[in-house]
Image (cartoon, rainbow, N blue to C red; front, side):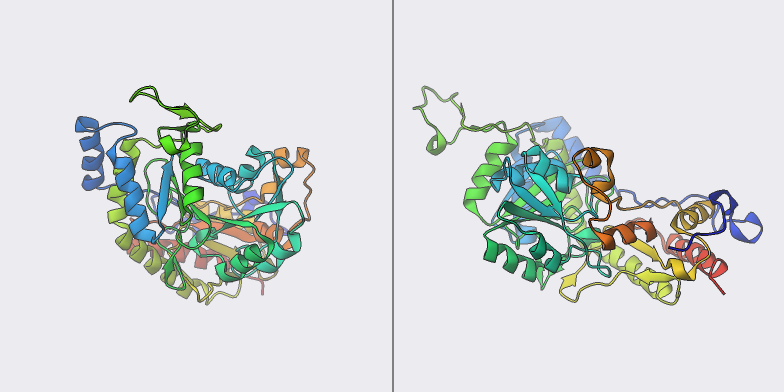
Length: 406
């Protein structure tokens, strides 16, 4: 890539140092209304704080929302991935294929089970994992594939499901970004063998923290329940010994304390009531961004596959370095000078020192590595006003035009 002749310190706000707005706008923020507050307060005043009725209520609601037969909520999205890998039978010596353009948990869940993450490259236009690269990465040790619906756009599930069926692999869909999205008219969460959700504060709906696994397979469902709660059961059908009283339970496997509180569940239930309006607003913002940025030759707009009706969690701005006099870092700093505070999602997972210690090296996934050098996550959340959106567009356009190559 051509090197810029400017230093990062040389990127001020343009036009006499006057930013497009006086106050900062951040890349993501939760939206909490009085109904959310009241839902939590009601639990605090009258309800069980954990292992109470709100857990079942949330699980039922997620099943209705997605069409999945079973839902298991847990403490966070990472826990959801871990118990999914365990339920899939991932263990020592196995391999799990995933994308490098994701939060580390998508790969770490394999390491937690003693398995090896194998990274498959992405499609350079959609940024999701490339089905052909998945197939090329399969060996006799491959046990599962963890696909990631990056930015909220569904992965190409049809070809990946076909590959998994042909090779007898478990398909785990990391749907941390995807709640509200549909693939071929069917809600993500009811399609893969297991789909995980995250309810982190910057996600489309939040519980502060929290996660869930959706599945249509009863055997997987029963395993997920065990792994969520220490491997302990009160289900007499799963017990080895005869119960000696109503208090009796057994630990029949090694599980974890990944339970969700009723406080979190109550908040998520309330937030899910607002999912249609959250989704509508996010789509409006994405449409406005796409319309504005498609006109600028120094920017590339993420391609969306026609099968995905996307509720976008992230909006990724990709620069075209060959058409700019600045690089991604300088563009990022220039936006900050305009009081548009962005982020970058994601650093390729195998770049991290821990993965380097495991023997991973740069060069594994050229498309992913090039993407990382060129992307910035722009502000995208429900509470953005039209003025906020136009401020972001003005700042991006101002920088892209000013630093465009002649």
